[in-house]
Image 1 (cartoon, rainbow over the protein chains, first blue to last red):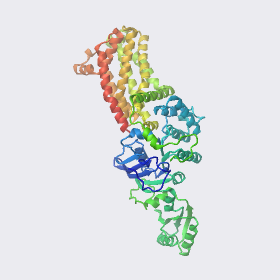
Image 2 (cartoon, one colour):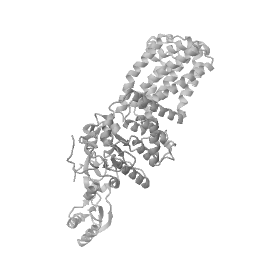
Image 3 (cartoon, rainbow over the protein chains, first blue to last red):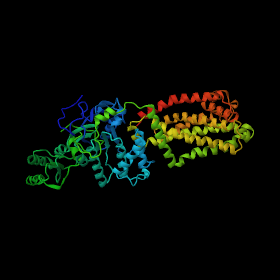
Image 4 (tube, each protein chain N blue to C red):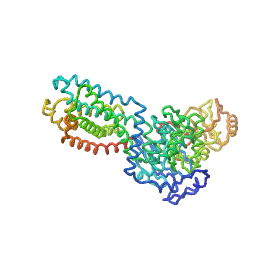
Length: 341
Length: 278
């Protein structure tokens, strides 16, 4: 039952021999009609870590999370949370997992305080303690002033905070966050990141989905990249970025016909191939250091390849995808996905 | 996992939580959770008082309208029609009220908060049964207003206050049980509008193909046969006997039996389709 071949220790030793993984999923599968939303995903989340699931819209991130949270039936495959079978013990799983959805799942007709009261009492917390927990969480999430206003009047950021607060009432050991910062302004986003980091210090394990590479980079100890319902890569954010380069040199050639010549030059200078973008005459070159851009440019001029525009950028999710899968983050693109590069 | 410093707060340990997790939900917990859901529904009613429009207006409007339209034709005059009609309106009002249960549940289910209800370790029936408990208030208002309007128009129930009270209680119980049918419709239909449409299709034959407004003897044989087995007819007859004569007839037993059968079928069906849904 215990898997120990995953050498690195995420958050210290496991509490007991039988349940060293917070989440263990093998070959998870979900089909909606003809569409296979999740197509055989394996996932191993260690206790005490923040695990990020990165992927574009429609990649199957939310579907996967909902299956693990007992909100959707698992069509095929198997999932365990702290050693408890998800399909067989949904009631136990619901006591172990706090879920914060993509759309704030709080009651609009109630006030913030009433929401926390409702969810506390539903989970069998006695009235005085429920009242105390409510006040504590409202303070912790900066919602004291709005505590007695109906949630219908809340801003997006406030709703998200209340939603997360509601997931923490029983202090569950595992928290699922589905795109916790999508649609938030940069400042609120930073606050949310701090809150999420704080959860782990309290001993929680966090599984989050995101569309943003920088969010995974900021928060996650390890990341799985999901595309078309399959896992295309997994590793630490650093490992992922190394696969793509720390920055990307984007080249637009004056003559699209000179692409092969340019590829040759890049290979000679860096020892690796550039990614040929679907746009005509465009190359993306992954760089370990931004300095190397100059070397590539000088070599291209020496070789007589002329350039119409050039830029150096941090790799975007698009580029990670292009590098990992050989296609862009297009939901309708049905070309096959390569397994790990 | 317990190596980090957490001042004043105990660190979450997964193994303890797994060991402490309850495997089943007890009946007591289910009832407590249902009452919390009822509390939520009552809060919602208080903040959206327009929800009471149907239960407040329909008994007043229909009692006045039907008395003057059908009174002369069916019973000779309005005064002698009232003892026949008021229990009929009572049944109809309560049925319309329980139809709203399905529509409102459906609207509610489309909101994000139902996702949280589903992810919490609570009885699956609580989010369905809670609003229905709160709806008892709506039935009470509707039933009381119907008799109130009747009294204003000159209805003097021969069964006295006790008879009327018994008739109201029976109507509330019936409404509450039949609401499970509409709750089930609420969990299977695609949208709130669809729920409304389907519920109307169930409701109209049930109320109009009964003895609520016309005596059965005036109907053709095949129709009379349906009217006689319609549970609404049993409710109407039972309510007439109670309100007008203070007699607890066998119809009361038939009504309660029909209600229990409906609940035994539709409560499990609702929970099953709610679990599968979304």
